[in-house]
Structures are given as structure tokens and as C-alpha cells.
Image (cartoon, rainbow, N blue to C red):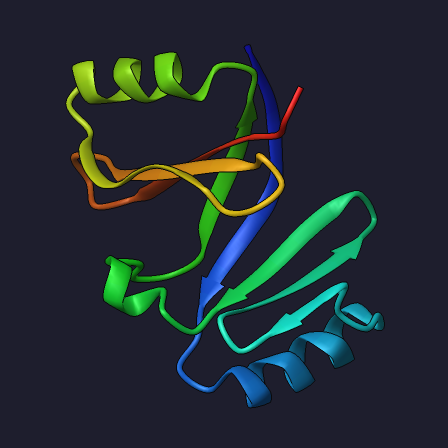
Length: 115
């Protein structure tokens, strides 16, 4: 089951400048502030900044669809012709993410929170 897009991750080159910009935009301070990731929560939305995103193949913001079974959804996307860019990975606390590229070059992320 897919519960919608609740997370979007932006690849950034300068995390300090990006953090300042998104703090001004969202009018909140980050809940996670690490050299490898800065995350904001506002209005039920999770907005992340990834300074390593470009190296992972992120060409722009990636919407992450919240799913209940990430492995089956990922398999379905691959069967439908998507190209794997990041296999399922635990990013902490049992939260799993993966992302693919569709035939048009659009990036699609999947996110599964721990049960």
C-alpha cells in the first residue's frame, strides 16, 4: 500500500547555505542537523537536504512515497521498467529508503518507516 508523498529530499552542494535557505522558507529549525543530512518537519512534510545526493545520482529533488512493503514496491517498479539507483537502505531507526529512475529520467523514492 502507498500512503502518499510525505518526504522530499534535495541534493545540495553547500549544506550550510541550503540549511539557511530552507530555514527561512519553512520558518522552522532542523530536527536533524548533521554534516551528511539536514532534515526539517513542517505541516506533516519531511524535507531533507543531502550533500551527497548528486554523487548518488540525484539530479533534482526526489519525492519519497511512503509504502508499507518497500521491497515489493521496489520490485514492482523494477518490473515496470525503472532503473535502480539506490537499493533498500536503512538510514537509521529502521527507516528504509530506496530510489529509482523511470524511463523519462524522473526520480521516484520509496520510504518505509519501522512497524
